[in-house]
Length: 292
Image 1 (cartoon, rainbow, N blue to C red):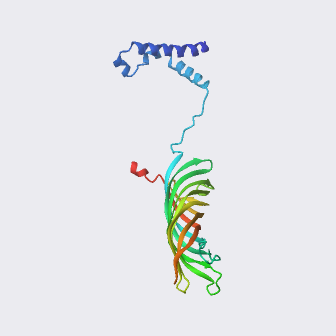
Image 2 (cartoon, rainbow, N blue to C red):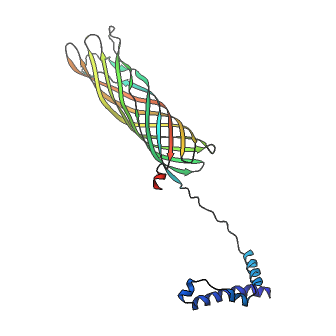
Image 3 (tube, rainbow, N blue to C red):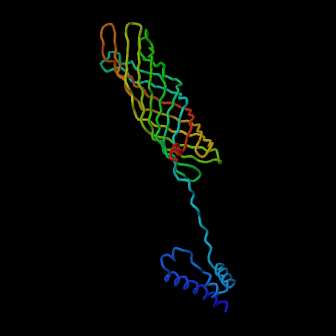
């Protein structure tokens, strides 16, 4: 008898509801459905017991709730730091110059200030983030000395005064962040791009002879490095990192001026590289409040 009720009661309920809806006018459908008459056909206690027993036989499936947070976030970064820069010299005289043993040697070393910024997108990954960004930076004036190596005993190695101004670089970077704890993390990566500077050189032999050169150098650039991060909030991260930056060689024409003649001397080749310590502040979703 109980098994029959379990089968018949749901069927009666479904049939009665279908009939009630089919015969109802539109105004009646919009209003509340009166079920009190159904309770006269089937005792309330028997109906409750049947529904409870039927619910116990239904399979229970866990429902996973998706996080409202996006798997990727836009960010901007401000960057400042120290660039321990080296400008290496090379090149030498033309084949037409009488002394073939002349050559440019040495490097100018200086610590310069660097600053800039980056904008990118961070993608959620296992144990951290994958960040893809575009970075632009500038570097302060580098001043130093390199030498013209000669085989003239009276001259020896004659110093060049070298200036590299308006240093710049634009890079496309990829960084992989790994979380060490809820707040701290480490990262590594690198990038490629372009960079350059304005260079000027001058040399005076004290015998009325000078060598001068001035040009704008630009070349392929790359960098690699890593660092540590501290996440202050979900949107604010402090980054302390190291990068090695390298810029390809560029050539600057040199002009010789002396008591008897003026002629092209050849070229002054320079290549820029730097070890850099950088402090960065990264802000995720910087325009979030603007949309509110």
